[in-house]
Amino acid sequence: MTTQPLKGVIFDMDGVILDSHSAHRRAWREFLRSVGCKPSEEELDYILDGHKRDEILRYFLGDLSLQQVKEYGNRKDEMLKRFSGGVQPVTGAVKLLCTLRDAGIRIALATCAGRQRTQSILADLDLLSYFDAVVTGDEVAAGKPDPSIYRLATKRMRKSPRHLIAVEDAVSGVQSARAAGIRCVGVATAERAPALQAAGAYPVVPSLGYLSLSALKSADSHSETPNRFPPG
Image (cartoon, rainbow, N blue to C red; front, side, top):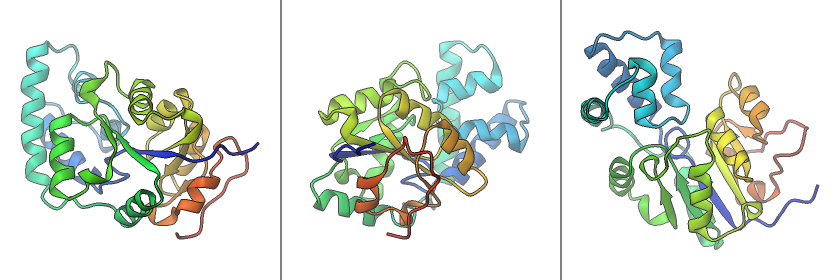
């Protein structure tokens, strides 16, 4: 199958652009324990699968009122601030963003994180200027795997989904991008790679350091042959 010309790349944020999963996990664990919920480490994996904050709260705590969702969400965010001081871009992220920008490839972010946190942390890390469009979880009714967030990102980029590639580290994110008609590259450990491949990611690489512009241009999520790119 002929690969469409690449005109834009849409990145997830946490775990793809930012090395932030450990901070998220710690904040959610502490918050949930503060309200009497003690999830297992396996259950905590749910928080890293592209869900919006209110979806996570209701998953663990049941049917909450809007006021409770707001109150609990604010408490969790305060805890996250305490643990996010050491969050940095993942290795290779800035290099890849620079390469794409210099090549005239449009860049967007599609994250289920809230806009306030997203804008703040990207600005603090001097990353905000790389993105032509930023779509956050509070701009769509449903989080990933619903395709709304990628459809909105596509609309803001003013590009056909056929000319875009998403970069995701979660099954729900891959499903969201593919449902929006966008090819998807996965970022995952060897243990998690098969799940992303089954969801439609191709190829799946260990980190952004394995991606280059030429590799992204040649990515074809419909290929059935597993592949890993050499370091870019």
